[in-house]
Length: 149
Image 1 (cartoon, helix red, strand yellow):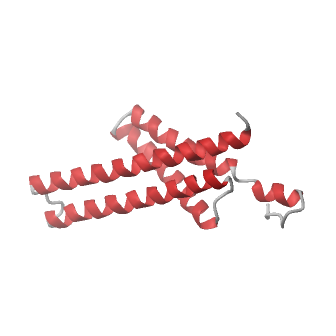
Image 2: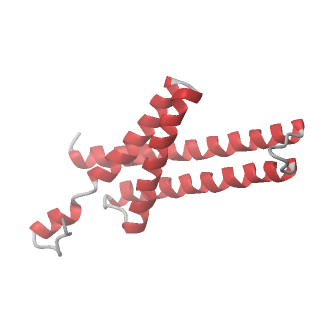
Image 3: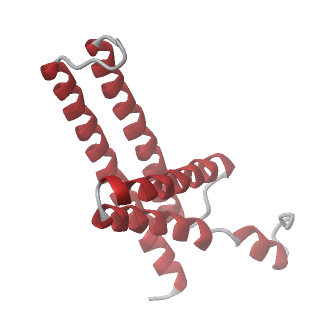
């Protein structure tokens, strides 16, 4: 498989993985919301219904964020062009979040969860790096301005 096919495949696989992760995150947050409601739990005097709703809203927001990342990667794979600046920043933030969550999951969940988080991190970072030098290559060929180094 050549370089173009490899980077397109990795970007597409990363998009699929992020869609699955988005639905998983929303499902976990909904489950946590139900647990808080059923147990009538409170933390530092907070209303249990507020905590439950916060869990649902947070899960939906994070799920939508992961779907945005998946959209950026799928679009990158289809067009075979690097994402714009905004979507690159979104993907970089997703990579950092996966790195931090991966480090936290070692102690809380275990090494298997850590390995899964690092696999997703690797897919995102590979997609970012594989499409990183396009503007410099185009500038060298005379197709545009070079990016500052």
